[in-house]
Length: 317
Image (cartoon, rainbow, N blue to C red):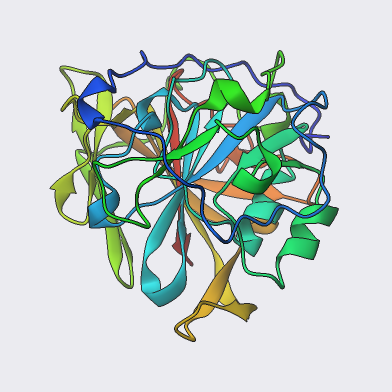
């Protein structure tokens, strides 16, 4: 896949793997809405990155393995709530979750990655053919080894499905983020304005990023509460991208009749990038599904991200 300009990005560093013993995780049954279509089986080669769809309501928190992700995407779902997609390109934690269902938005978003694998709990029946046709490895419980997914007694259903990523055989290849269009490097010598805090609001969710000079990171809060790992450390990002996009209705609905929003990640628009305690107003552009997303300043230069974890929040423009 191309990156628009063809410039290859540098791989990101990843955070340390969190301790998960305190969760009290225990094997259990897999969900009923397993899905997965006719995609490649778990024994096939592929999966230069592993993307995992992660629950993001109160009963699902704290999530497990989120701090190890290279990129975390936040997108709007039914009833104005949010879901996360964690993308792993460097190192996999022992356990990730809670895992939830895929959306149509995910398929377009993941096209910018080379040979991605997607771990998800399932999808509604009308979406399954699109997942099968997408250029990715679908790894729902019905397509994964029997012991890859399990239920935890520490959380209530349906917020208790977890995955052991090493059981998915989704071996990460070199340069898994090169196709994204992301550029990493030192902070620009000019431009940007000091920023201490930024909040992004969905109809029924919100994300706040607060700069910590001590940690040299943006501390993450969700829905008014600090977002923490299972061992109590607050989640933190090196770079935060608030990307303003078109969020429209799709042809899909949930079981309660709520429309599933579709987030358009192809096109162009405005974005605000936070790094090193500063904010940069930039333009994002992704010309086609097979292109990465580039972020450029007013003078036409690509804005480098700080090495480390990136959060991309899709805000309605």
